[in-house]
Image 1 (cartoon, rainbow, N blue to C red):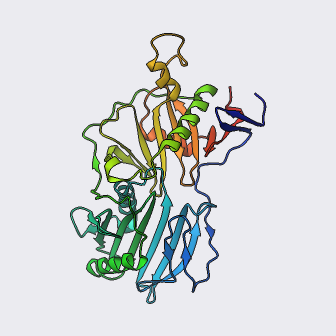
Image 2 (tube, rainbow, N blue to C red):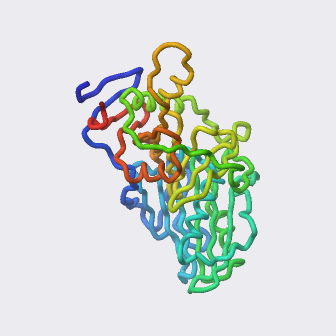
Image 3 (cartoon, rainbow, N blue to C red):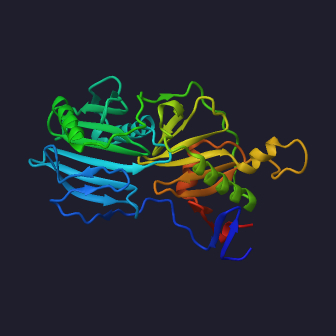
Length: 358
């Protein structure tokens, strides 16, 4: 197969010598005057120059499409600072991303000895009347800052994460957090549903002695086509209460990642990479699923394989080397952060690394 553009089953296919790395790009500054508000086109969220008693200092985006936006705020006396994150995720689950954001916060040396003000995160209504968001405030026992707080709020298929740190006590910061959230005036979310903190899965999956292999070309193409088909069939209201199935945390989190799945899933799971929307998946490859269903004829693969893909915040799907058995979450994490992607898909445009084709 030569380099160029081909169409396979309605999918535009490009063979390329290089592919973009899944690493987060250096953020670009959004050119917004300090005294002007900025509206996010896809969610209609408006970030004003002043939010409650905080002043917006900066506005950046780690993508070229405003899919991972960060805003910095500070009080006039510099006693309180806040960072707001707005990002898109293939799994816009408040429980999952609060779990990741809280783990990230609690792992920092600055907050390692912070004491939560409540035993469990608190569900609350960030907009409307449904308690669809989670928050937690912490007291800090030493250092110049005496408190920190975290809130994760849904916005359809997007999430808003707010982190605040203050020299004041935790009770005062909790009130500030409430004021800032109210001042944000989050757009109404028709898909909002009551939320509870995520829990550990009742049992851990049995991971095999998984060895990394480069997938066959057919398997690679089928994986992309399956991902595209799944995206097209995804309902608009994917977070609607009627269709929601709670997730649980699979096994122990690692440094920079944690795995999640539905309780009844036994042949795959999702790995949240850090805490800003990027999701890696491992599951039985499309070719292996097809082969397993066959009772006659030649199988597409000699043995089952487990595909690994990454859903980025900008809508891209990247494919990485697969495994001979169900890999551990650490193996999946290291696959997507250390290995070169074999291909990527955005919409119906699929790009493969020419070196990966065999």
